[in-house]
Length: 445
Image (cartoon, rainbow, N blue to C red; front, side):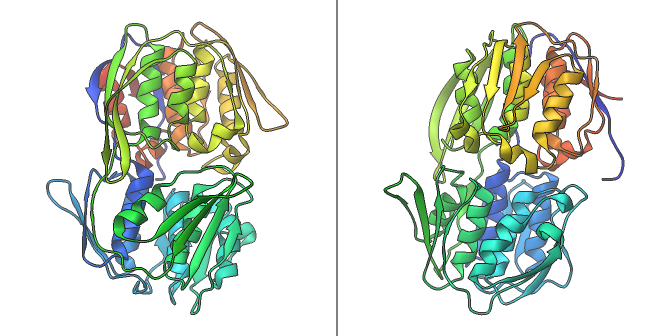
């Protein structure tokens, strides 16, 4: 996207309605990748059709799989089988998605093929060495820019070696990349994580027929082990709606007096629900209705009612379960009564932007008192009333920064403008229309 799309959000009345936000991005990426290396057909209902996931679908086609959308919105993936990915004739463009790039590097690293990865200007700034380091230990080779940044060439290993790797930083992307490389590696590959991270890869691999075990070690860490070279069989997948996307209308509803919004089919994986746990601690009226399971993933309908929020301390060990939701939590904290302290946010500095710095700068522009601690904490001093707003916030091509400040604008005394909302389509297609359908006022400037 070369054309910037400034958006402005203004204070609104109550938000009302029942909606389903788009499908979970993490699960959508994985369903396409695993369907591509399974035998037979994988049928995917509710796939997120944002630009990030469509880049993954295009990449899987270049690697030899079939991935097509039916007229009714159902996606069908015809896999080539594990170990049979073809060498692509073109560069694999992963757009804005760090998840897609890192996971797919792991999957292709264990195939004897050469692939070149690139992305947009934002993705090409993001570090990949955290993934390439363990994959190189397994036998793959990488040639990229400093820090392992894209564009980057992956030369898959002819004879991959299983490893046991302890994650230096909690990261579901790194864990998943190693596990996916372990799929086509003989023997058992193990990743040790001191803090639990998203386990969508493990759950979905079991759904496709792989043997994946999780064991708690004496020091409290978790050892996740995949047994290599299984035969994966095509499956039917129902993708729940994305809790990271549900966060935006949920927070907006909490902040607007008189609001009541029902969010259907939200994924409730316990390693993804840190934001909702925190909002409830802050006094948020959130009811979890109709709990159920879909393809191994817990799901519920969320009824959100306006609430007066109070500041809390968010512990560092909650970060892996809500790492993408801190920007919108900061918007909620700006409107809460008292101080909210968010600890352990170092990982935010290497997302689509330096989200920690971007959130602090944006809140300051909107008249909110905020501090960034030397320990990568974020401290937001709320007054219990509407923040001033009236500012234009830089987004650095980051979709979650854009959506978070548009949510803040619905509760601010003066409108909040973001310099570019075009990148929202990467993860939440139709965001503006959906929010305005609930009663928000978000306009293109």
